[in-house]
Image (tube, one colour):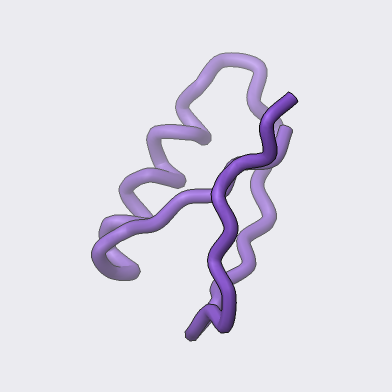
Length: 46
């Protein structure tokens, strides 16, 4: 599963990750942080 999220700050990100880790059966996360975005695209229609 891939999630793209935006949080207000790193504390908010940490709180979100704690909630995700609390989901039964969840095994782990890998986080990447973008300091800036040149071009933001919305989701592609399927």
